[in-house]
Image (tube, rainbow, N blue to C red; front, side, top):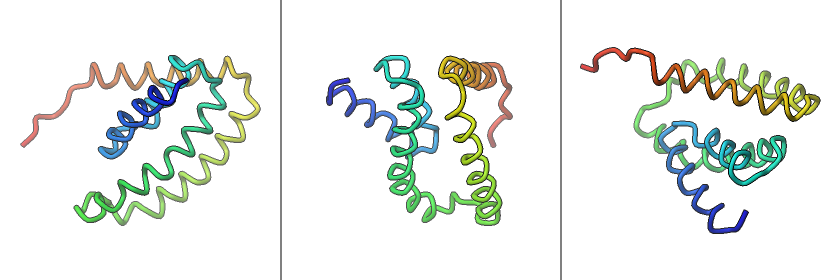
Length: 122
């Protein structure tokens, strides 16, 4: 993966991360499907990518009142526990199974987005 391609992937996924759309997931797809990185290596890069991307987007969302403060502690606690457990499980999984699980997750989310009915906005 050359630096220009990596820079462009980081630019696009950084913009999406700023919107809260899941740019890290798309970065993971890019790294595994197009850049040819191993799933576990891509996941590690994705985790390191997410920390500064999330921290730089957070002040703007906080300032604009886009944070449900009452949900912070429960979400953070559950996220920390589940992330630690899932990382432990993923480290022990066969990489091909891990890729299939991730692909299945993307298919389910994509189908849900394509076929779910959205309520009319007011």
